[in-house]
Image (cartoon, rainbow, N blue to C red; front, side, top):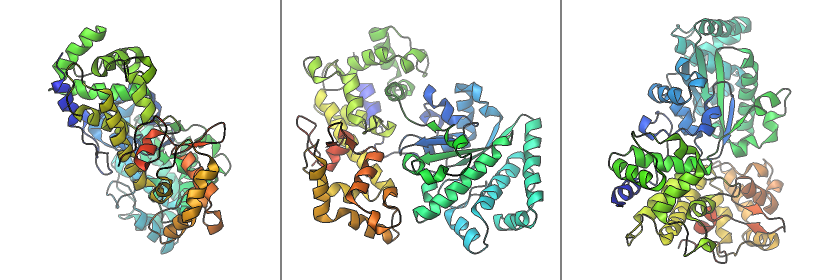
Length: 481
């Protein structure tokens, strides 16, 4: 069996690639695990997920006509072919199709004194009018808000009228909201505007055609104040938690190989010889998407069954996922594909397989560096939190770990840096300096999956973060230099 074509396809993966805002993905990039069907359902208003789990990717996949048509074929129950989709907020500049920017939101609240709830309702009304092709009551959002503020009853009846019109034709208007952590310059403003959006989503539950869909970060959703008002549990209780199962990640990798013209034939031969599956088109057989025993057989053909001479070093299929998982057991698709890319690029090239154990270990090292860099984009304070912990051996006692932070006054360094407005501090710090403690910082790391507290009280850090942060673990993968 020749692995050269599969190796070249995996080596071509861009390790820095992640889907940004503003443009739908190409259909060739879309892999839709069955477990993500609920996350795409227009009837499910709240989707919660960590960075890299697909919130922005699915936002723009739903917004794109071609990608939404593809998803409609994959999940026909959702009726996506009958949906008109607009983006209400995505953390970017003002959009002609209905989205609002943070700067415009600031202006509408501070200069024009409009409430956050009215602003969100105006954004949704504008998106609905544009979706059904009706002329707007006002040309700009500023003018639309003046029109809405002048007669609340007229405003609400206009929204109901659009809902009724779309319902008669069995269409739906879905307005998407992503990147809510960019709604303001501090957590108080972000919290206030997010609560207003949740209130509007709750009010619109009775609408038949107009649907609100919110993609929210896990740490933001953990803020109890967001759902402390009456009936908020109706939104939070129906939430969808967005994550990738192990079978989804291997399905993603195998789909990438199967779809490539370069590797399709060799991969088809591999499937036929290892598990008797036929690859007649670029779509994976359903069994290979869901059956982990079949996936493991294929990966054993690519990497061998074990990370050493026998089972005591770990089975390759489980080992890779385990070492890429955070403290909550979650693996991002970007980390997984990055690890496979680095493992495929490892030299010397194996003679009788695609991956060597050392190559897979190198893959975890590179994926760790990428994941920590990715985390720093979302939580800039993480650099100051991890730097004093270098060379600490984990699992560690809580006292020893916190002593590292106390020596460098890390919590207060983070709090002072955040006060400059360059980034948001951990939610656990709140808005008061006395809350910037080592215990609060440790809780922040635990909540985002960077640290875990073991039953004996010791603190551990999973390899996906430990390796790049240069912490030590007996018998573990060596930290990156």
